[in-house]
Image (tube, rainbow, N blue to C red):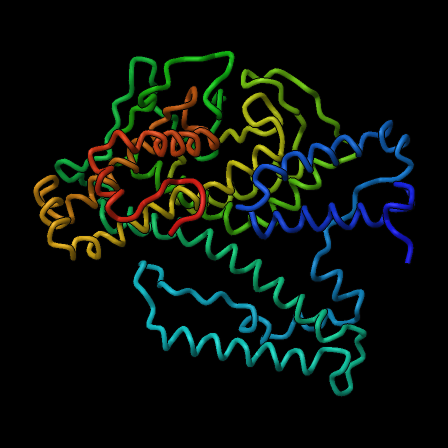
Length: 427
């Protein structure tokens, strides 16, 4: 066996390609990992894709992401993808229902047992050691493929869950046409505000999705002016778009990988108002996002509130890496909110906390409504960007809301629930 260190970089080409591909693929299924190193990795590979650098290296560091379907086809086992048992063998088994209630442990255990039995059946039938199998795949390789599908589904379900819970909380606690006293979603913007245009497919241009642009204005407060009904629709449509994005996040990850490491579209190093950034067009990501937006607009069944502009490859969202990083954050700030709302009865089981809640808010319901009304108003008020109603501005406003939570009158209640912040592992 020849030591890797004793070989030239060109002779180690396959080693480098495999290592970098594993890193990229690992990030897709574990978006909370490699948060500091993934960007550096992609920048390195971007530069390595440059014709001049690739020529000087004498080889490429790029390798297509390894996908389950091509791998199974190569092993002659792609027919497993049409087996209905694969659905049960890779299904996500939640511990809470769609309303946030804990599912009985015996039910969860039974589902886990059934899932394991289906996996064993598929392995026995489709692996190369199975009776009459014409495939060349080993039992271990097939198990890896099944587990990969299962992991991908689990990631999607865990990311979609918080969005679904927030949609449920919006629909069950607020009436679109009648505002409750003290908990109205009506917005009155600052002097620099404007009313979001309402049209089915949008138009116009919204600047500064990250909070700065060459057309800057005061964005410390609301920049949108909406009636209660309009704001309800604005939030409802935004959350449904976020759900579509989370359901298609793996597709967007693959497209972002292709756009970033494209050999036909290079980047330009430009000062975007947030320092030097690599500005690069994102045709594949843009195509998918526009499709998801149109799908959401059609499903809404009413006029689209706000702008339909999707910033990609410009000064606001310079490249696909920035785009994908923004949208992977959605579950990170929605889950703590939903968890807190679901956990209010539990923390109020403590008589001292219950007394505090009643003294400060009047009731547990008032505390819940105060948090939800504040988020649905000021998490979607256009603050933090110039315009605020564009597709990316909605996300920016929510992030700005999280940065101001320490100033809210319900912050101490959050802390009493075990809240540790909107970034990092949630407990």
